[in-house]
Image 1 (cartoon, chains in turn red, green):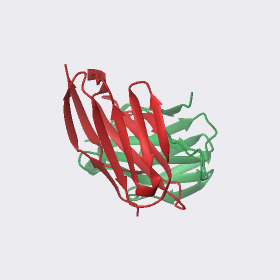
Image 2: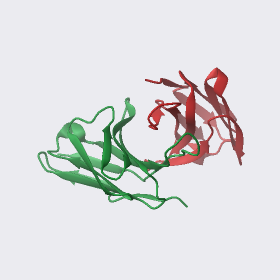
Image 3: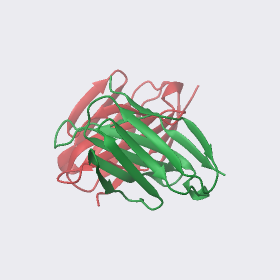
Image 4: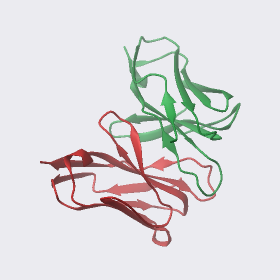
Amino acid sequence: GIQVEQSPPDLILQEGANSTLRCNFSDSVNNLQWFHQNPWGQLINLFYIPSGTKQNGRLSATTVATERYSLLYISSSQTTDSGVYFCAVERRGGSEKLVFGKGTKLTVNP
Amino acid sequence: DVKVTQSSRYLVKRTGEKVFLECVQDMDHENMFWYRQDPGLGLRLIYFSYDVKMKEKGDIPEGYSVSREKKERFSLILESASTNQTSMYLCASSLPGQTNTEAFFGQGTRLTVV
């Protein structure tokens, strides 16, 4: 099956810093999503981005489908950005199931 | 707003009990999913349903069954709960096809089996 690797596994920042999270995947995809898991465990949708670039406030994401990676940028980080960020993909021609990476745990200190 | 609602946020059950986890979505999505999340193992797919009464095993179906009698509702059943089923359970829904297949998740159910 498709493999999804996220890096780094852990990231510690001071408030106000910028960061880049990476997601590599091993096959062509129909769907790529970034999620933020809040402290209560809910997965919050950040981006649906099988290709191209999107921005939402301080967050933006870019997927280069031909090179099989996606990047999530967080600018001017805040303590509320802390949590685990997941990348998930659905393989093109596959059975419409999302496969998740192991996540990046982000800690933003005041 | 898309809404996926799981019936309980926290649940404590005894070993051997039959446990039902319920999930309801209001977006008329054909696809529904059950995942479990464990530290170090990430999110793993238990079962998937692509239509009413249709189901497909995911990566870790052992010890679980599912029911999809209505389009909006997908139930996960632990036939005889065991302590190794203590976990966070997450339900999701999405549209089928090759485009516009964004998945939405419920708030999660933390199940403890004692």
